[in-house]
Length: 88
Image (cartoon, rainbow, N blue to C red; front, side):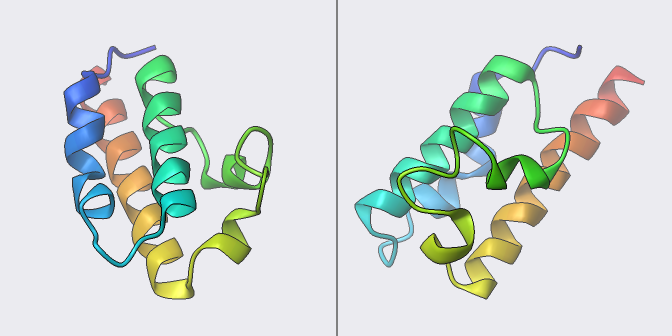
């Protein structure tokens, strides 16, 4: 599995972390994504967002509006594509 630099995960999601419109629960969820990527290199599939530990205390679909969900999934996919390309 490719090594993923933790600061790169933070950088990829910094716009979400710094988004003044997100509430604390949403920011905590973004941190869960970052932690997952730091531990695993990247997120293989955005469907993981529907499973533990991401489904508690509130689901991804209920926590974010469509625009934000789409942007988060794009960021996740971009990181994965970059990690796979670098490793390949």
